[in-house]
Length: 134
Image (cartoon, rainbow, N blue to C red; front, side):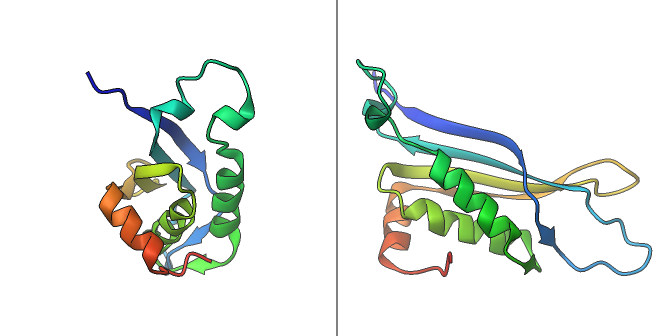
């Protein structure tokens, strides 16, 4: 049996501005991020309770929040591309799944989002090329 490990971040409300909306348009009230980071199981199945034995995700969350708030985005896709670029800087991350959704979409309900699944080969390719995450 194979052992897998991931870190899951769910429903992180980002303080961001995405899209351009005309008069009468429904402007989203929230942008929510879900992020699953697949890591080496050795960073989750530990014998000693010490930070140096695990993946410290706090700096990543701080960087994501900085990216979200650093200006206006026309699209959700651009923000998640930049977040993937930040994730690629962490060698501990082997692959990831990212989803960003906005709500409401219509009449006070619904959510609409973009999801990416990034495998190890793609993540390594991103590491070799800048996708302008900064």
